[in-house]
Length: 202
Image 1 (tube, helix red, strand yellow):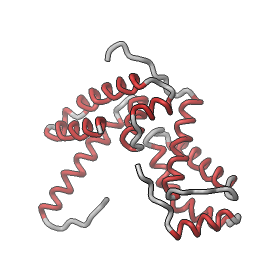
Image 2 (tube, one colour):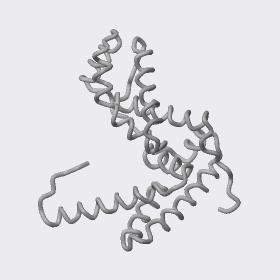
Image 3 (cartoon, one colour):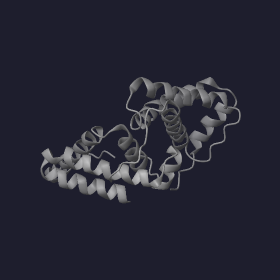
């Protein structure tokens, strides 16, 4: 995936950071802290842990401020740092054990039609995210890395130090759980599962 390059305002902010301007760090913190919390929470749904990990990202950014060299956008750089810290936290704390199973953007819509479509979309998203929250931790982790971080099965396996087969098994398990969790949503169930299935296979 092609990452956007840092724009001129970000380049100026990074230049100030490299000179030791603590105000630049504060501006970066204010702009990205909440977004990074959301990124990490998708993988580790524990607020205190997320806050600690995101704060570590900014501590490390300041520690290396004189040598910082970002070729992507600042958002992409910080997001990747936060995700890597979340993964390292999971691996070092051994919060998740993977075992091979025996079996396998907001727009202002004003027309009635647009409003109705927006409501359907919101219902779909709400139903899907609620279902994702019911997934066991390791299934949710694989799902998040696959769909939110857009990593391939092989990349996920490498990061978590497990086999591609395990990733495939977790995906199969997640799809089964999502289907069962969405049965009460009627027509939404089929639609959301179709979307989720497309996401997994994309």
